[in-house]
Length: 224
Length: 366
Image (cartoon, rainbow over all chains, first blue to last red; front, top):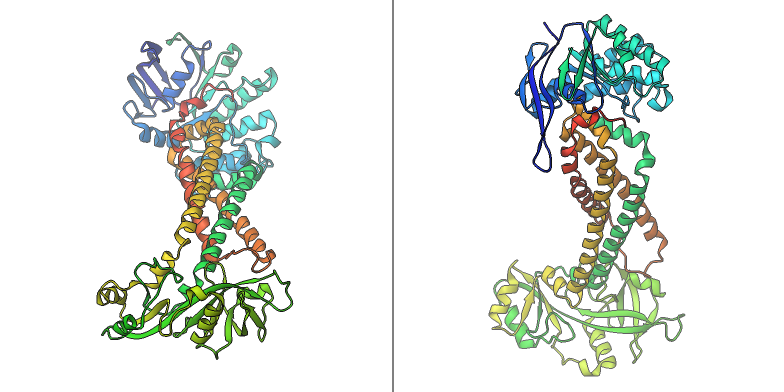
């Protein structure tokens, strides 16, 4: 089963003056199970819109979106919220950890906002942090962690709900080249180890070597 | 909710400014409430203490003892009513009293009552020339066994004991026999002297709705009140309550605005975090619930601190210097009002929380 199938997806924003802006134009993309796809494009090309639609944050104007066999094309806000809780992992551009929660709590917050399983979530957070090499940093606040450690916590948070698809939004943009490569290497290792698919949004072509393939997007049009 | 409580616990400094401001508002609110209670208490104690079913004044008196006259024939008609069990006369004269040991101009403000039916907490009328004093008069140096000189005529009255919460119009109650009251009134207010058998008012025990029956039976020769109505009818009481309630209302409105603004600012500051949480699957109501919990906790902490400070203030204020009555009831009611203001103020942020777009978490750098 494919992790993601976008079929002929369009997203049109209506501006304040009544004019329409096509952010995504007849985009078709398939991400296979266990595949890591780099989505490359300049600013304003539609990367964020595609990522948001694939992650159930935005609804498309037209087209079909199927994530791990679940058709979310016509989902309303509530259904999308539940879908995100259950099926999607996000790693944001600036990591965006909750500053007053420690590393472990930044993982378990996903459970608190969603299913509230309690102890199983605690065990999963411990396991993920151990696997990510942060076993001794569980009690540290984000401000007490290095950039790379924070990135790892963010990856752990994205994996907490055992997602079908993880969306990485420019995960290396705030890091220097060396640390960026380390983080990408970590992302690839962790995704492949779990057999989880991922889309890595980037405008940095060097990132693509860590991905299985690259998809370019310009002015809302996808090109392999 | 856990998230909200963790933030409060781990980042208390973030809420310190709001907590301090709400604490000051709570102190003001509780102090005003206690001051109002104290004023009302010192104005109405003598009437509230009446353990009767009706207080009867003459029709044009507007519940003022000074303007009221009840003639013996009216009393007889009231006593003859089938629903009446007991009737007693009640009169008062408000004067200054010289207290031994105090300076010649250092007068104690007293309200000397003559009574036939003992109010709650007051013994049966004492021997002529004696009186029970309200304990607030202790602040003026009055002691048991002391003889004070009442009014310009310096009528001697011996204080033989103390009672509590029987003040009237802000003056300490002095409870004496009919003869002592008539003598004091005649000596010091000859213009207001009453003929024998004529009282300023009557207090009546009987059926619960006896007040209405009395006015009907006397054909308009009386104006009768239940005790609660008589309390509210005391000249100045409603005005005091109205004024204080307006000040209290404005204070609550200020609290509402302060809490509303604080949490609105906090929400604006956290739009990015809320976007991230929504992207992770948080519902808007979960986020708003967290804000509400924080507003309630901040208000509870502020109210608790304010309550303790007002109690300490009450202890520190010398008895009798300010008519203040701090009670758990007034502190709790102020806390409840502040919590209501917190909930309403916080709800101003609901719209902004609902408007936070989870898409804002993606493609932003901070």
